[in-house]
Image (cartoon, rainbow, N blue to C red; front, side):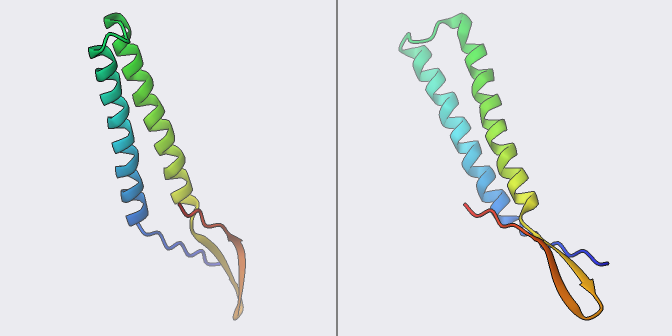
Length: 90
């Protein structure tokens, strides 16, 4: 039995940049909210940790989908039997 996995890193890199950008936008919103007085000084660090945790959590789902987006093939004699085929496309 032979397993083949073809993984292209470009979707992972582009998705990672998108989630990094969204996290940076979230952090910018925290600083803007603090500057406008909507968040107290004692709460800024907690909200920043929340934004970073949320950004990482969204990214880890993206990473998991990228890891699963390949075919597992089973070669029996000369016939090609596709066991699992799942593609997650954004």
